[in-house]
Length: 112
Image (tube, rainbow, N blue to C red; front, top):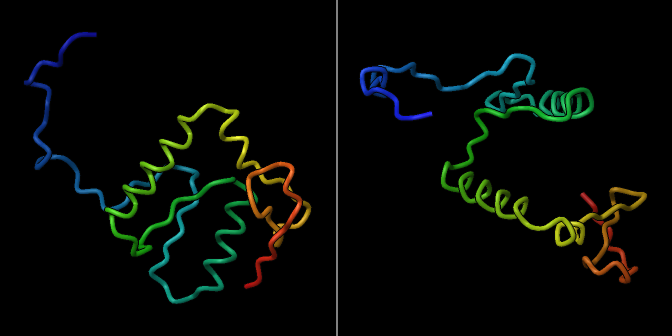
């Protein structure tokens, strides 16, 4: 494609000051309100009907988010056969395999 003429590059200080980037149709969940039960229903609804959502005002430091995003990129760049080790399919979401070994039939119960 070639290089972009510097005359067309706008300095970032003159760009829009967006605190939140909203995409049309993506559910936006704002955790700044104190109504936690509403958050649960919003997340459940977005997960069921859309499969994804955007969370704002979650209070997570940007450095922590960066580390999580880096780990996710590294994981998804791995070969499929390695990632399939972590494909835990069980009948109850309250039980998860104790290890990624497919021959390990021991389950651990999660209680909240």
